[in-house]
Image (cartoon, rainbow, N blue to C red):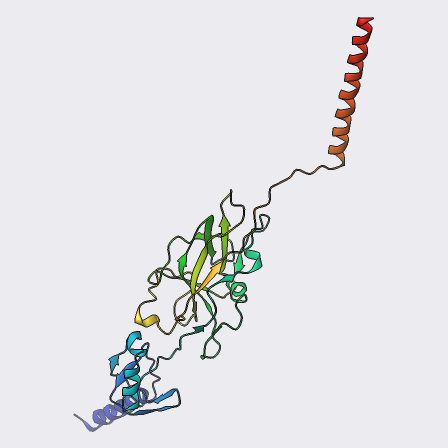
Length: 271
């Protein structure tokens, strides 16, 4: 190999090595490795490790593995942290989910989330939240969602932990409960949800398997329940304007005069 080719090869290897050295590796799941590291309080301090043993959520919650990490192993934390939800399981959703026949456009996901302030959080900065629906009860009607600001609505039939529906807090995604025609109040049905941090997935994505390890840092561990606060559907009652009143008065006057004339004719015929 000539000197020039060797020189070019050395330069190429140098730049390639530099690129690898400054790369910001993103791990989608935690791993154990034999590399060095230490724990400061409750925070794991570690170096970037590419090769290791994949960690399952069960292992992550096992104290044995925390002990191993403290004795020389490195616990790799995903580049994203799961949101936390610490609210109760009963929530009445935004007031404009209430049936309004003249403008039944449901509630935005932002309005729904605003009904549960200070119950969810994320240590990652500038997190935009959403809901991952994992259960639906369509008693007395049908839950629906829209991802085009209410232009079209899609029925929510079946959702679960391994078949979740993602709804983002944005200016296009909305949720509503459409009651049956004979529904007159009471318990309308509910939706079970987890808090979603939008780190992966898009609004409207369905058939999402939240039980997969790759989703463990994207949704909250705890779940909550949305209950539609739906009022009874109002019954239409006809109203009467001045013209209707005059017409009714005229008809009553006409038939009253007619009845009086009939009685007068009957009296004359008798006498």
